[in-house]
Length: 241
Image (cartoon, rainbow, N blue to C red):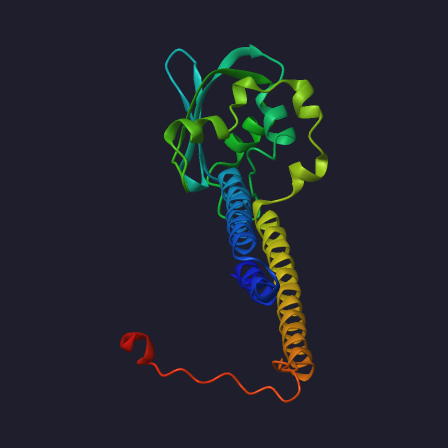
């Protein structure tokens, strides 16, 4: 809202000096820029929410096959079966080094089975099969949502090692707070800049009008000395002719 208001104020200040075509092209470009900025921040918002783990359940069948279901915020659910033997990257590697894709907040909520969680956090097994469901948000389609959500089975240890430690330890709440601060700073900057351009443009336009009024001199028709003024024609003279 602040960004759109700043853009509007800026164009109000530039309106007296811009041609209609230039003004409309600039206004259209500003509208597209505001929409793209809003969409970019919304994308970050939903990405942070999809990281947040709401529930983890572990199941084991009669054959000893272990399955894990991870339910995240914003309608993301991961179901994967673990390998019978150690693998690289392991589930422990994905959880500890892939916090940018899935974040477990141990400080919030409650842990019903601490031993099970510790076992998963230290598991050396890899992911054999994975099924991901993601609820579309904004203008996404179901296919786009699945492409955006990272599949754990596609991760490699080299990929995980390249992720900065800060991104793994930063919680989604902290990411949303940073996004809020960035949006407030960008919006306030656009609003202040737009108001400045509006005031400056209005002052310049008023100054130009005053200068034109002061310098205005009516043009008189010069006639030779002693000549008579041209006769005034009656509005009915043409009809009479």
